[in-house]
Amino acid sequence: MDGHPEALIDLGAIKQNVAALRRHVSGAQLMAVVKADGYGHGLIPTATAAVGGGADWLGVVQIGDALALRQAGLTVPVLCLLGAPDAAHEEAIAAGVDLSAGSVPLISQIAAAAQRAGRPARLHLKADTGMSRGGATAADWPALVAAALAAEAAGHVQVTGIWSHLACADIPGHASIAVQLAAFRDAVELAERAGARPQLRHLANTPATLTLPETWFDLVRPGGAVVGLSTLPGELPGWLRPAMTLRARLIQVKQVPPGTGVSYGFRHVTTGRATLGLVPLGYAEGVPRNASGAAEVQVRGRRWTISGTVCMNQFVVDFGDYAVSAGDEVVLFGPGDSGEPTAQQWADALGTLSYEIVTRFAGRVPRSYSEVTEPQELAASPGASA
Image (cartoon, rainbow, N blue to C red; front, side, top):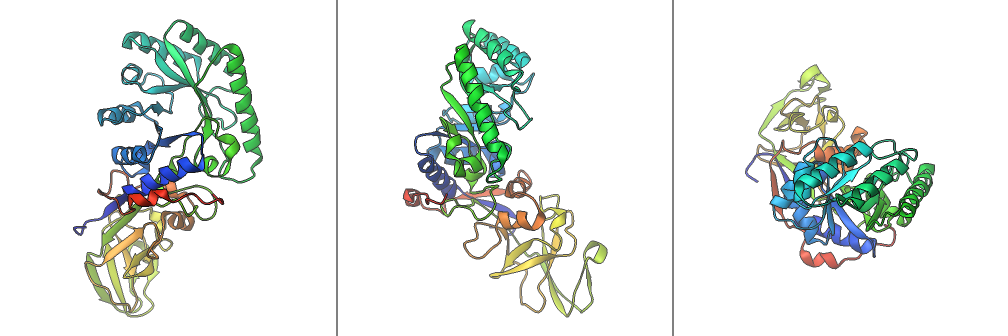
């Protein structure tokens, strides 16, 4: 670390997480979802590490990301999860990228693109089983299946998957989970009665992968768990390890008298003679402005709350009478090994998800990569409580 802020990514942790997840789901295949620039960890490094850990598939949202994976030399199957009209379908089909469709017009577009590409499109049909986001509703599902099978009969597509997404899998016991599971089974049954022969049926996101075996079907789609995060309440399973450590250094330290107002609006005032330290990260780099007076950082082995308002490119920490120096390392969050805050603890303090915390820094803070977690640790087996 050269003094500038950085997000240090432990690729060994990503490999370990994927290997542990594969063991956890036993017979099901595993798609590592690396959307949002690998959840802020870097698309290509995260995807490469996930494949190194045994991921059978990769999942992205944008076709551009799928093509970037291919250009990087990754040959495993890739699914573009977002079915969007007027996307680069022809390029995706030519690159062997699987596409998703939840509407009849989109199937028509993809079929036309396949004709231009000179090869059938590999297509996953998306059912809206109750989340009310993408996919075909139960009322629209028969027409979607019929359109897909007609395009398949014409040689323009191959229906390789049927899938849906759970709305409340991270709320244990939520009534909608059973409702959506039944709706998904009904959608698959209808499609197969009509003549569809999908290779893969898939429903499980990260929380379902961790806690709902009945949702695993042929393939699971963890995203946050790949980088050691989850939206489930409580602590992570011990066999998942957060891969990102966000750190900086104090760039200035000063002594101030009691009653000194700190940062915009004087939302923090020193209670005694105090040492203030300046950290060169702010909301432009991804530190939420509402972290002011709420989120903690670690300096010299102790935790300190951000003091006063987070600014555009900097924030202040009041160290009281504790001795610190310019150049001291500041850890905003990490895996928690040395008592530093975790992204989950930041999320808890700010009323959000760990996913939002880590993705805020994508493209704003330089990333560096290491393999702190040793490859031999991949042999560790998931705990039964996962």
